[in-house]
Length: 66
Ligand code: F3S
Image (cartoon, rainbow, N blue to C red; front, top):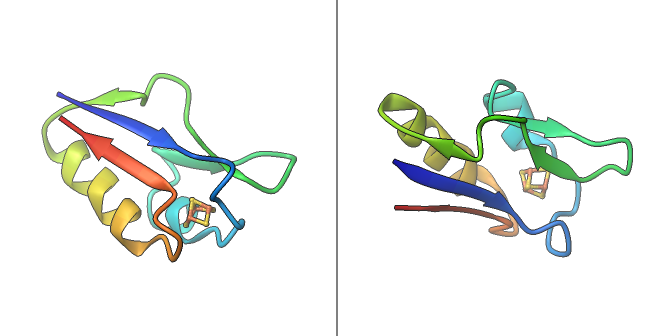
C-alpha cells in the first residue's frame, strides 16, 4: 500500500503525469494535477505506475510513499 500525493504549489501543469497514467492523475480546471478520486492509496502494480508518473514530473511535485 502506498500513498499518492501531489503538491499543487510545486506543480507547473506539465501534464506528463496525467498523459502517462490518466487513471491515477488528472488535470484540474485550475491547470494543476490532482490524484484521481479513490487513487490516494494504491497497491500492487499501480504503485509502480504511480512512481513512474512521479519520476516523470519535471518538478518532483508528486510523492509516492509507503
Ligand atoms: Fe504537475 Fe508534474 Fe503532473 S508539473 S501536471 S504534477 S507532471
